[in-house]
Image (cartoon, rainbow, N blue to C red; front, top):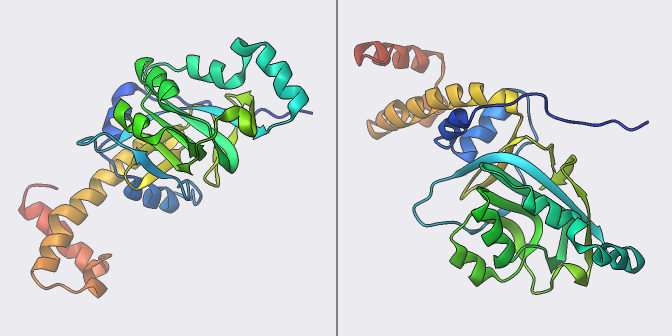
Length: 249
């Protein structure tokens, strides 16, 4: 029997915009507190990120590669328009993020500047590769967020073949289901179940207010990390009083 894992929740583009104000670190920590302990993609970092852009957010479109097998890859390239990696790329729409599983393969670059340009034109927001990209300097010139484990000069036919599109994959040790909400910044990437996004935005706002407007102020005044980071019970009472006094409650 085949079991199909899929998302049943959708979120608005407006909520995606709000999520852009949340950092990957804050989202990762919040997910842990919500019971999702494996959402941050380990070992995958920005290799290209536009100057001045803080983050990118989008819905996951997934692509899976496996090690090349010569007889099957010949068959695939005899029908090139049907190759899953090209189908995946051409399926990209506004506010999508392409997430690629290569099995952490480090001997082939699966994305270069040509594919990156096409994805940007179609409205994609970022590319994430659990593996390598190629043409790094040209990719940087596209001025588009691309995250990966590393760089390799070889192209896809060297050692990989695409076999799956828009199915559950693994990326950076994280399960990614099509339609998951992906948040990326210079700290990396996190996969968020769609039903969690609204709560993350609300919790993150409170967290940011606590950290930015009060904890840092108290630390500047000489408060101890033992009592104020994270705040103990007495410090939280102090914070609530501060909010009331300053019109935040």
